Length: 188
Image 1 (tube, rainbow, N blue to C red):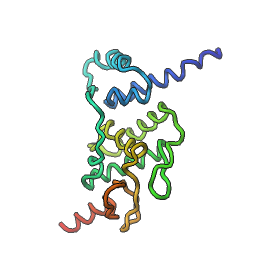
Image 2 (spheres, one colour):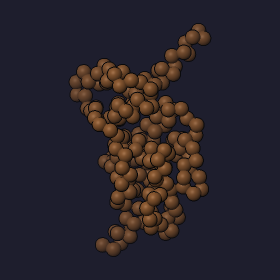
Image 3 (cartoon, helix red, strand yellow):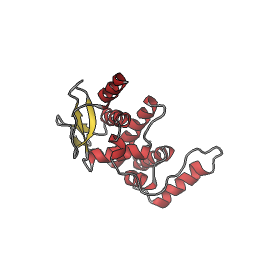
């Protein structure tokens, strides 16, 4: 093995991440942010590895990535799934929270490592939820709303002491979505 054999490892990591994100139907802009590839290169990868295959189920989404946080907190089932997804981001090492429920850091990861860890969390999420509420782009939007925009944070439930996702700029009712779902079921 020569010393120069390692020079392409970074390029291969970026390529494998692009393939993985295309499989999750990530938008071109999201893939570009993580890999640094040009839009043309991403389209060529899709054309070479996905488009020409029979039975291709991978679609290319167009337009800007969704950024509204209301999709994560507008009802209890969605808020519950967003909490599970945020917990998976932490367990997969994509981010860390402090005691007040704010993101401390994204653990000093470069963009490729961060993309890999978000993909790991999303894949675990898909294993837990057979009919998931959120696509990969929505999961990426949740990650961005927590880490970059800091619009979402964690809070503790007054009833069960569990942790859940909430809008940092809205009133917090101090009850997690699981307790709200349980309360709604009891009232029926």
